[in-house]
Amino acid sequence: MNEILSRILNAFELDSTPVTCEKYGKGHINVTYLAETESGRHYILQKINENVFRDIDGLMDNITRVTEHQHMCSSDPRSALTLIPAHDGRNYIKDETGSWRVYDFIEDSLCLQLPEVDEDFYQSAVGFGNFQQQMKDFPAETLHEIIPNFHNTPHRYRIFKETLSRDVTGRAAEVSAEIDFFLEREAEMATLQTLRGSGELPTRVTHNDTKLNNVLLDSATRKALCVIDLDTVMSGLSLYDFGDSIRFGAATAWEDEKDLEKMTISLERYRVFTDGFVRSCPGLTGAELEYLPMGAKTMTLECGLRFLTDYLDGDRYFAIQKPEHNLDRARTQIKLVKDMEANWDAMRRIIEELK
Image (tube, rainbow, N blue to C red; front, top):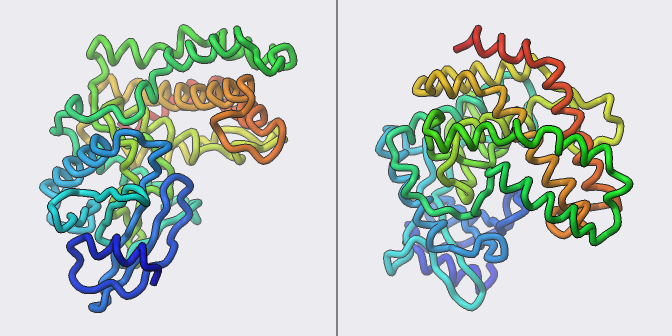
């Protein structure tokens, strides 16, 4: 085993001496390893990306308090991540190689990149709904803001218009239709933030990265076990988590698909996810249920706006594999929003039927 990894692992309170440590998973932000000790017990070792996450103390404090609260809400130790402390009692260590943390590995679990059947998508909804329900009594306002204004859509619009006014790449003229699409919906896209400010929508603990692969399933039953990747846990709206799941999971094409005819919203998958989310999170308020479709639309439009902003700014944020990659991504999100608008009454009816 690598000498550096061995030294890092031995700084934590493992059950015995580590003997192997290999790269693990498909994450793009942190570097993740699976370690095994002499006893056969497994741990997850992660090097935290300090370029993305600047406030490591705040990030780890959020994760520590959230996971401890989750464990108090459930007798199943696999229902939440468990941090392993360092020998000095801290929840992570920092040395010349970076910042490192260790989790207990959740045995007999399954992580899917894409749903194999609708039930997998349903279980992802159950996982994120359970997370909301577990955290319903947690004081969300006490969490550190790891990424300021992450889902503040009016703030995203301010950045978009500033970028547009600079037009450093000279690309604005060629995408005037896309620019107009977003500007025409600016007022409506402030709805969630306005309702949060007035208190009509309650501030909650939100995961903020609700992809299928951030819910572990039981490998035997394929039922939701727990949510993982808690780096972006902050205070927000339940509609952020619901909406981003729909944007990703109910779309019928990849987010960089060039054939826009392939991109629609699957009302069946929308129903499947909504059913699982609502059933597993009975604490949602009437206002939250009413605005679930707006959560889906807002998160989709916000993501498209960010893609177009980055395209106008010279592709400085999102990794690209081709010259118009961010533009392709923006256009798929535009198409998905348009399809949601065309199916708006059906989306609202599904909520009424399920709530």
